[in-house]
Image (cartoon, rainbow, N blue to C red):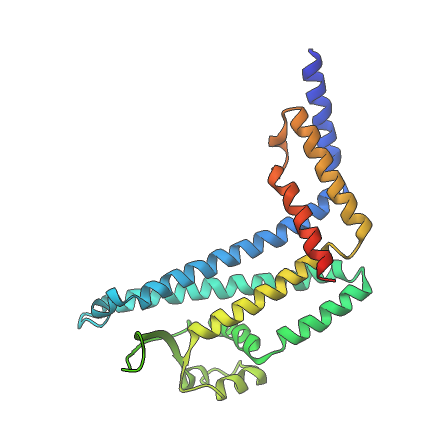
Length: 266
């Protein structure tokens, strides 16, 4: 057996030891968080894509054609993408509740900040409405949407939205009091485009803040994680075994970047 082969075998053993380390477990925690986040981004992007298509002036004539098969098919696709987005959104919420909170509790100061931020965001009426809208489609029926194309001589372009009827929603008795207040304050046609997008921006801001706090829970653990990741990657590169790892050299730049961002968020 040549020396290079022996060296490669020894490195494989080192990789196995690394995979059993706390640093690798922390890497997996961060990776899992960002994977769920990425899936959410993709679902939001797909929802926006079909809404943009729905709002395109080029399809207006076809949309309102006497044969409504095209309109029905497009609205059905929007409902599908909307449902996927809502389920993806709250899979991130459930993951935060089941996994991230446990990790944040190891640092009382950070956990206290997290609880305050969570209450400020999760308990506002818009978020409760979005949450209950997910429950509505989970436990009651699909979200029945309508389409509105509005024209006004004072507008630079027509306004195009999807909406749901207030009276249709209120037939369900599963709304929380916060959601009922939100619905009561809304117009008879509740236009979803702006509600979804403004909530999404707030949600991402909160989730990104939570992600950065993970790096601050235990400074020594975070520093050791970064050192271990860089060390195992350097040795993998030296042994031409980078394919054994779950990250590339770009990840090394990424973890330096997010550590700086995390420290600035203190």
